[in-house]
Amino acid sequence: PASWPPCFAQVAPYALPMASRATSLVRSALQQWQAGRRLRCKPASPVGLTPAPQPRTDVQRAASTYVSKHHVISKEEVHEYLSSIPDIQLRDSGDQVVVKDCSVLPSGFCGKPSGTEKADNQWKVYFKGEGGVWFCHRCGSTGSYYDLKRMSGGADVRKGLFTPQAATDSGAKRNRVELKMPDQRLVARYPLTLTKNPSGDKEVTEIRSYLVNERGLTPNTLLKYGVGCAPYRFPEGETYVNAMCVTFPWILSTEQLQQQDRDLGTTSAELQQPGEYVTRRVKARAYKRKSWQRLDPTGGGWGLFGLHTVPSDATEIVLTEGEYDAMAVYQATGLPAVSLPSGASNLPLDVLPLLERFDTIYLWMDNDGPGQAACDKFARKLGLNRCYVVKPDSRDTTRIKDANDALRAGVDMRALIAAAEKPEHQDIATFKHLREQVLHEIRHPDEYNGTPIHTLPELTKVIKGFRKGEMALVTGPTGVGKTTLLSQMSIDVARQGVNTLWGSFEVKNTRLVKKMLQQYHGNALIKPGTADVIDGIHAVADQFQQLPLYFMTFHGGSEVDQVIDAMDFAVCATTLSTSSSITCSSCSLDLGMKLKMLIKTLISKP
Image 1 (cartoon, helix red, strand yellow):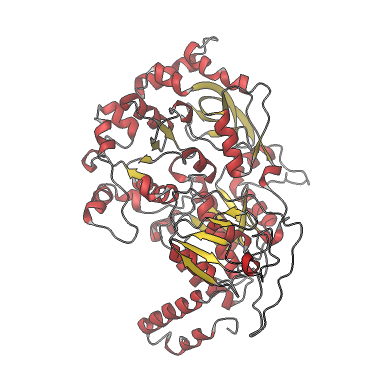
Image 2: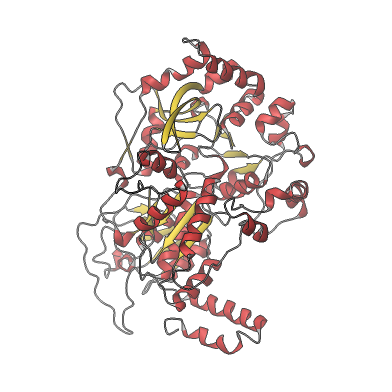
């Protein structure tokens, strides 16, 4: 296609008869194309002409995307990305990359883009090589590597949406949305309900017995972590039902709450009587139906279970997959231990500021495929230099899956933590590092089949589910049901907790979600013979809203690079990964754009 770079013309004569030759040529062509990739931040100037910088007024910058100072992005990656910006001039200064003229950077990057022709206004923007954090010595603006990508046409994170910057109000800031807080007096009663059971509820007695006798947790441990009981409503079918839940509060000091808001550019709801500690949110899990979980309140911020138990001078911490695991580690070792808010599926960016002060983080995930894969993802997000992975002996996987199992089995948990190892380098591995995973895969092959599609069992038998690092391409003429099939697949995998990102370029998101909502419910949302929706439409919508589904808001003709940047940003923001589902429905795009997206998706980070 004419829109492709000229270097692709050399591929066509060899593509079919010489597959290996074509592969080599495509790889070479892609490398040339990537090296010269141009951002959308500014059109290239005609050769020999340097336009005078245009002053920009009322520059409003979006809130920064938080990136840990321990997170490592290579200097080469930063340099390569900056080099693709038209008219930019760079130089190295130790471990930093310096930009000569900030006016060539994306709009909104610098608050003082004019006057850059003066020598004393040049070479003022510094990018730290290891991490990509930048700082402008003229205007004092700062941000992360992902802020730069977002400004140059990437995506902003919304609840369930990845919104291209061009489609949003450039002055909209996250701190215009107030993060809700739970009723502090109400949630303070939950631990009392568990320990004292003033109403004599039999189910509360059962829960307490379960936690102490089956989970092996002492009453003092439960009290220290603030575990409680409370009834919550859950949608089921077209109605709501009440269920007694175990509650896990995300408690943090008022100072930590304020610092988190400053780091993230957010605002938390004001409290009537703020104390030294506040509950950011409560995670509730039904006792009898473990799959029923909810966060209270909806629209609240993110936190870490057990953070309030960590001493202020602690420099080491154990990060576990589940709440019971964190309490087990603390009870057995006395070491500070907290748990992830969403298990191994996600490490929200909003909790990174809460972990910034620790020099050493021990990652103790479940001893299964998803848990060990999460260790690698989280270590790179938190910083490889300070993370250690706890791996129980592979010979004990039948009885020790997590830290709580180790507590009940009487294992020396301090010894396991002391034996924790650094994550292996992403490009180099030895059998020593691969051994545990290989032996685990031999013993539990079903865990590595990939994410099954339960509603399409025959298809699952053929493809063995969706496996990490693979891409499935569904093709067919218009109207045969590609979008319907992909919708069903994405609902199925999202129900299993897999983060799923949609890019629908032909069907608008509202129409797409309407179709998906009906597929999710399994029945018509309109009452037969009437124009009225079913009575339980809100219950169905509440259930659907709990799925980890995200939607990019691109529609129609879109720049492929911009779409790829949005996917890259989604990886950083929601821990989407190669084991996640990234669905692109693009049947209205021309073939050239389809193939470009196909190839670039293969070589991009997601």
